[in-house]
Length: 165
View 1 (cartoon, rainbow, N blue to C red):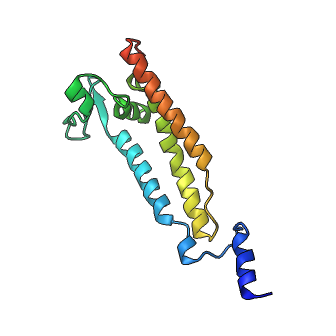
View 2 (view 1 turned 180 degrees about the vertical axis):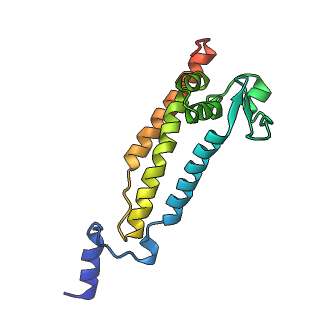
View 3 (view 1 turned 135 degrees about the vertical axis):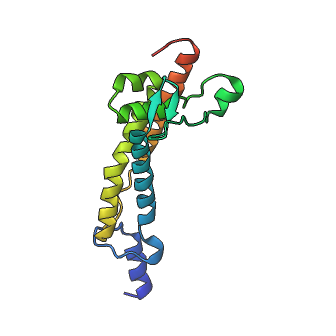
């Protein structure tokens, strides 16, 4: 059997856990490390920040409120679908589920998605470090983001209609 035939046969097989990666096919450990750091940073920030008077997000130790960042609220004087997510995250990090729900019910789902990234990305980094391939779950990512989009738009529509949570 010629070398070209052997190369084409081996290229058509799916990679196993003992696959030796070429430089172009190496799993990107930086991608997982960056996502792990970002998600951990979001959860750490939510733990350190606090909410004052149900509207102000306050910096720790200094006690100064962060500026309003929602452009839609500043320009059009209505909340956007993501309004309340920061306060929701802070409330969840402090264990106030009811308060978190009142700020943005979809935030509970997003907080869960971010929290689950920490063990998942750590596991991916562990696998890559051992020379194993990444576990790809593209269908799960699409479903999770679709649920988040529907939840954000649904709660926003209900709030515009005057329903309070």
